[in-house]
Length: 458
Image 1 (tube, rainbow, N blue to C red):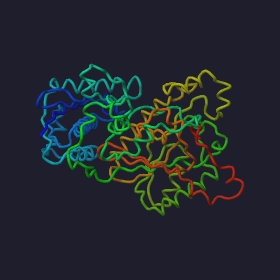
Image 2: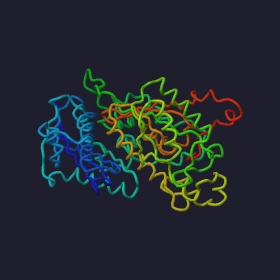
Image 3: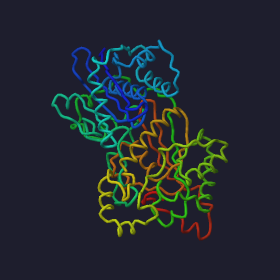
Image 4: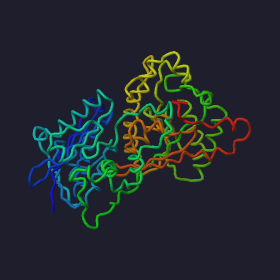
């Protein structure tokens, strides 16, 4: 039976603060490094970052050989003692992470050893690279496999070694709220949706969409006979609801988190009531979390009143701040700030005029909020009431799709989508974009209501 050594580390500059992890998988017999990975996590604690490093290392080992045994070495006394069963896990953030780690391999196939920090330098270096990269770019995800390590190749942030495709969480939203290209969706992202995420995992999703001739030897290795999807338990399922219309929505004006914070219009409140009825009939929502902005909170409260639930507020779900563009139409921004608008359309790191928020910053914020919510609501179905940019970002990150994919998404007011997050970190997406619950609207308002969903922050 093959044996792997997994070394992992995580850190947070502030605890909680900007955080990242690094992990290394090596062949126990030869000492050869097979996989190394790192990711910027946004704002989390040291212990969460350490557990995320452990999870990434175990998942990478399982992708290489699900029948192997694994020996984990970390300089985190807390993680080692808790995963060895000698210390009780009391913190609510740690319990679901430890449970996820315990399910990746069958019981008895993973052993744990504490090592001093100076013996964990490889993983520590990768974790610091992730934190440095996230601080400068707002997103950082790297994975390198044996073929690329042997050639001395350094993968770019957000890239898998085998395919060059984006993997896993992290990354920034692109300017998908402004225009639509009209082209077909990216083929690789479309193929990834069809792969069972409970089997493949985020990195395997990207590799499986590539021709076999382009994959590394590790990626082409056949799974052990009889290997199938492990029982990952119930996923954390986020039902994504865009808020109802506001007076600015039909006018297609920028309406982010830095403007007038409008409430719902009469049409928007009617839409929220219809959503509440539809969700009440389904009977699956167990909790509700809302953006702090008025239009989202009002939508959430209408649904909550129908379902008999409380509304929690998550700052990370707010809309992008569009700076001096708030309240303007796209045409007005084009006329007044053409250079700034062109830069913003071309680069997700460019911010709107007057100190607005770039889509890269929005993406990092949303990814961090997602991570907090996945931990807090593991195994539950949660309604997240938010806005165009955060919802499209959650979908894009779940698909591992490139930033330009947001140009090709339509998101109507009060529409529903869903993302399920499994214990192994994989995600699957269901795009309802369902407005059937709004069809009882009649009269002139109903005839003027349809939206393209291609402009930001409506």
